[in-house]
Image (cartoon, rainbow, N blue to C red; front, top):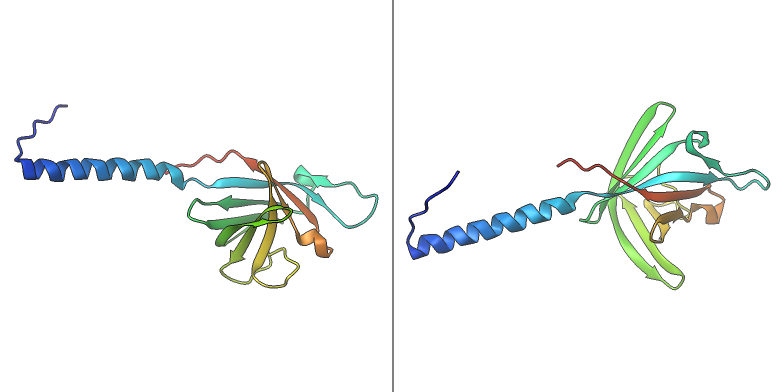
Length: 151
């Protein structure tokens, strides 16, 4: 389909701005997809007990990290799905980069040594590691996985 535009110079300027705005809007829409980090391994604090993986773990869980620095944490346990959310930021520390997750509400999915609404995860290119195990919590290891984003 072809469009014929008969416009004065002022209208053409408005048209160009509209087209430019549309292109920018469409380009930014593709960036709304989150990164998905899936729990792949869980360790306890009992010596000699091997790590749990896959369906042998006590629960299934993932983080969805959105480009606007919000996140969702989703846990499936005992045939029940629980979803919580909040915001996050990267913290460069002396021993690496960490993600500080701040939950909107207090909930039982928060794995933390501090007892508040925050989690701290050590981040590498392809792995997140919960710091909860520093205070006798389980060792939780997440890997970045593919996420099908339908907008």
